[in-house]
Length: 540
Image (tube, rainbow, N blue to C red; front, side):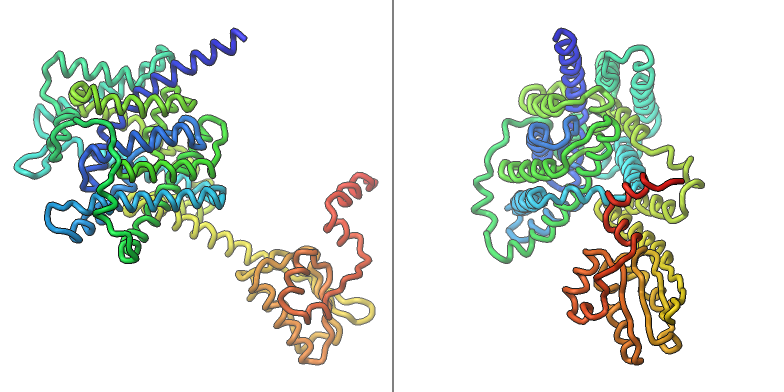
C-alpha cells in the first residue's frame, strides 16, 4: 500500500510539473494561431483552455494535450474573412460565423464518436504515420522561424546583428539545458527549468529580446489581458439560423472536423506508442466534439490535439489526466491573474523548447530504412511529408491512405492464379488461387478458354474468395459465356459468405453452385477447429 501511494505521489508531481511546462508553451502558440486565423488573441487562449480542460477530463487519451492548432487556423482564416463581408465594416461578423462553425464542427465530431468511426484510424499505414510525423516536425520548425523576425514599419524583417545573436544564443542555451539536464537528473522537468533559467537571464540581465508580451503587441493586440470566458449571447442574434448560413459554414465545419479528428487520433496513436498504453479513439472523438461545441458557445476558436505540446508533456513525465487538467487550469490562471509575468518570458526560450520537440518528433529512423522498405512505401512516406508541409494534415493523410490502398490492391491483383487439370471423365477443373476483386478481374478472365474448353467445366474456389460486386459480375458473365456455348459449368468449394453473396445477387447461381461436397480439404478450410484437430492427428 505504501509503495502504491509513493508511486501515485511521484506521478502526481511529474504531472503537475509537466502541466506547468505545457501551460507556458501553450500561451505563444495559442496567440500565434489566433493571429493566423485573424481573430483576437483571447479567442485562441480561451480555446486552448476550454478544449484542453474538457478533453483532459473526458478524452480517450490521458496525457494528450489539446488546444488551438495551426492546422485548423489556416482553414479558419478564409472563413473569418468571408464572414466579415456579410455585414458592415466593423460588425466583425466573421468571428461569430467562426463560433457557429466550431459548434457545427463539434456536432460532426461527436457523431463520428457515436458511430464509432474512430477505429478507422487503424487503417492508416505506418509509412503514412511516419510521413505525417516528419511533415509535422518540419511544419513546427518552419513556424518557429517566424520568431526570428521583427515588425518594422508594418513589415516582417529578419533579425540582424546583436539582436539575432542574442536570440540564437538564448535558443541554444534552452536546447542545451533540455539536452543536458536529463543526463544529470530525471526528477526535474527539463523544459520548465530551461524556460525559467532563460527567463531569469533575460530579465535580470536586462537583455533586449522579444517576449510573449511584445509578440502579442506586434501582432496588433493590447497585451495578454482578459477575464473568464463569457457565453456568446450575441451569436444567436448576429448569425441567422437559415439554410444559407448552413450552406456557408457546412463545408468549413466538415473540413475542420476531419482535420481535427485526424490530427487528434494520429497524435493519440503516437502517444500510445511512446507510453506503451492504448487510448480510446471513439471516446476521444466524443470529447473533442463536446469540447468544440462548448468552445464555440463561449467564444473560442476551436481546437484539437496538439502533437508538439503532447510530446512536451509526455517527455516531461506527464502520464495521467492530471497533467492536462493542470496545463489548462494554469493557462486560465495566467490569462486572468499572471498575464504580466507571462508577458516577460522570452520568445527564445519557447522557440528552444519547440526546436527540441521538433528533434524528438521527427522520425530519424526513416532515413535508415529508406533502402530497406518497398519503393512504394518510400514514395508514400515522402509524399505525405511533402503534402503536410504544402497543404494540411487532412489532405496529406487521405492522399497517403489512398496511395497505400492502390498499391495494396495492385499487388493483390497480380496474385490471382489458376491451376488447370483434367478429370478422368473429361471435366476440366480450374483451381483458383488468390483474392477475386475489382483489381484481379481482368487477370481472372484471361485464365479461361471458353471456346476451346470441353463440355464440362468446374471452377474450384477452395483457395480463393469473392470480395466485391466486380467479382460477382465477372463470375456471372463467365457462367453465361459457357452456357451460351452449350457447356456445363459448376462452381465448387465456395465459402458460406461467398455463396450468400452470389445467391443474393442472382438466383441463377443456385443452379451452378455445388453444395454437397465430399472433400476433406474443403471442410477443413471451412472449419478452423477441424483443421487444427486434423493437424494434431496427422502422423508425420
